[in-house]
Length: 496
Image (cartoon, rainbow, N blue to C red):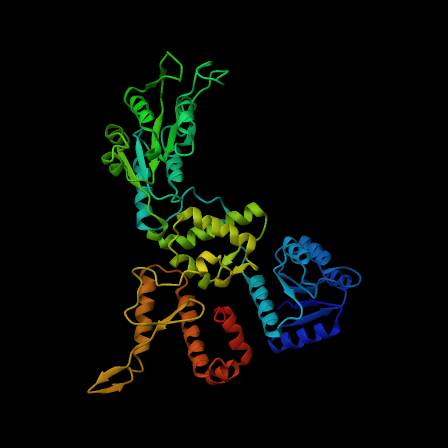
């Protein structure tokens, strides 16, 4: 096993960390100066590097920069007694795994080093995961229906109406329809009709002739002409003014239009794909949308489900967005712990996929380490209590934990003849088997890890409840070591 390297000019810091890590069974090498580390790197490499930031003969940040050039995947923890903003920013910009202010709590420091060690041991991302992701992702049945519809429409020129909430990915569907259509070689032109002022929208769509109005100093092609031979995507079609709805209807009916101020008809060889988050039938009843235009657009309708209806896609989408953000930022992609992922899965996402993408980008920038814990999530998620996913409720009460993890079902006592009898000693095993069967049938990944973490969390929380939070006593009752219970509490995020 490779060693943990400690670099600090303070002998007492090196001594304390050496003893603590040795007790944990971790091999350690210590250095008092950066040049000693650079010399050692010629023959050996560490598993984790823990370095002070200010030392004679070279700073920890300089060492970080040098080491990262040679070993870009090596987790480096920067320690400092000077907890200033510049040091923290410089450490993270340099690729540090974590920033550890002095004085530090020794068990927490050891736990942090263990996390860095686990990160170092992780397999590198496979080439299959590094290839370009498809334009759309989704395993949920509702998304599979959308994919099948796109496939069936791949040889068609028919008009399509896409409905769905804001942020659900309607433009992605429109682009996929274009990409997998006979018009794929032509242009894809998108316009958001709600984002353009009414007096400019007509010119944007149909273009204008020179001198058609004040400021029209040259003839301008509109979006219909720009999309010639391809696809025109009209987003938020429900916000189009009524007079422009009439002109759009004529284009769809006759295949011709006039530029603003023009007298010669222009042919429109364009496939129209429209989208809206509104209920067009309601708008028709209210007189705000032309019924004849609605029927022209509503030839084929695709409903894009909101993210809360396809929660099983959240892990897949989150991994993709974290990988993409990491590529854009030029950093190592963050990974979600089980507790953090469960928070995301249980969140309703009023902003849908776009909101999840924004959260993943935020985590790529702001999360303190490569493994994102539940406590690292944005406040908007932490403010919402963790609840079981719809359809996944257990048949009995569940024991809540401080981390938001759902532990194994608590079996109720059974009243018999006025006397409360304890449950059968094997009842909890049956309940665990039932939960395992449910997860396996649902295709849940990492069932072993999920149930193991729940089981461990339940044991530790029960022991801590009996000992009123005294960890050493709880560890003794469970038959485990003090360091083990501390590490498990950290891993399971039970002290959040």
